Image 1 (spheres, rainbow, N blue to C red):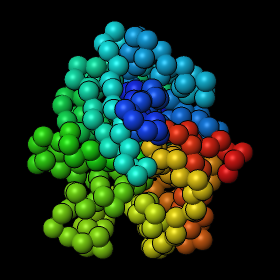
Image 2 (cartoon, rainbow, N blue to C red; image 1 turned 60 degrees about the vertical axis):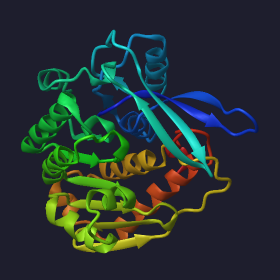
Image 3 (tube, one colour; image 1 turned 135 degrees about the vertical axis):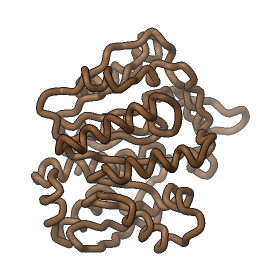
Image 4 (cartoon, rainbow, N blue to C red; image 1 turned 180 degrees about the vertical axis):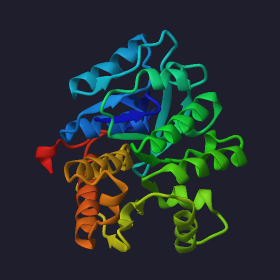
Length: 308
């Protein structure tokens, strides 16, 4: 099983049209989206974050259950987190409302209690590790998983507007980086984390701080760069026609990487470290194709394995 931790929320996504903007409610959250994408690719997937018992929480759990994701945590009576997603030339901008909400009702004891037997991979990222006691709990659990030999996966998915204390965030992030075995982040994430460097220098800094055996930096329309087994592979982005929006593209990319290495039996550090350049290129190209399919649909709507 791959267990996913991190925020769930409702994205109120701006719909295309003239005049006053209208918004469509979509279940979302970076790790939540990743769990959906994993399950759609045939991976046994568990979701560790509490979901609200309110009406919007019902939408969130309904979608998870429809795609076969196992709900590992008990539901919470706290309200559902919200994100208002406005689009500018198809690119999303976000405003978040998540103080005291259900998905933040997390501590280390609770996470240990809901850990499934036979856990192979734990993935976390996004807003869950941005700030607060819940972020510290996710980081501590991530470290505990790494110490047990569980494959740890991280996607920072930085939302700079929600990070009030940059120094505390970076200290937490560097602990996560040290314990990660699979790491994916965007060029925008990377340059926010290390603004004193250009992209190549920032990649070098990152690789010096992480124990990850697979490191991937996505470059939006310019493709992606991956590092594994002593290889560096760059790929172009898969074509997107028509482009509807990019909501959930990075989450779909992340999930597709994890689904592939799980199917290929490469979850150990040794397996990832022995990866060939050809295998790395295949992983990146398939993940890019999955993200491209998602971008032809409104909101996060990742492809099923049969579509890949």
